[in-house]
Figure 1 (cartoon, rainbow, N blue to C red):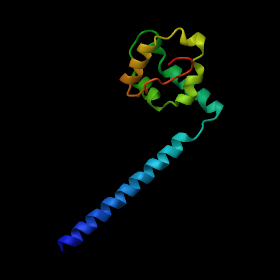
Figure 2: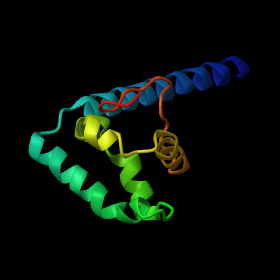
Figure 3: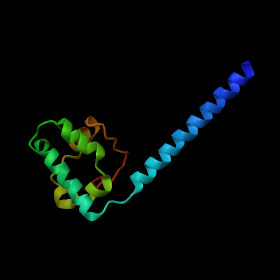
Figure 4: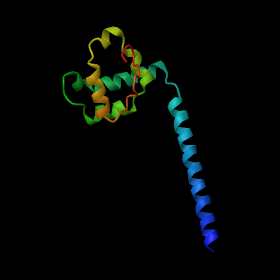
Length: 114
């Protein structure tokens, strides 16, 4: 009886691992889906509207942090041209991103800033 219980437990465990791996693959495929230029423009506008207060020195609101967490780098980063990047304190920007729960990889390049 003990051997049967172990066999069922390990086969159940293997089933759940396969389900989890399948779900992770689906998430990766969805994340990798490209957004259209109009979708990216809309995403940038939503970010601007949600995070206006940050520009004026206020902390990021919950709505701003949510927008930061769900925004796609490939939509946001191209907007940071050298002229705009010169106006940004990169350390402050990274701190805001991290405070909102967004990880910034080491040596990550976004627009013309690293």
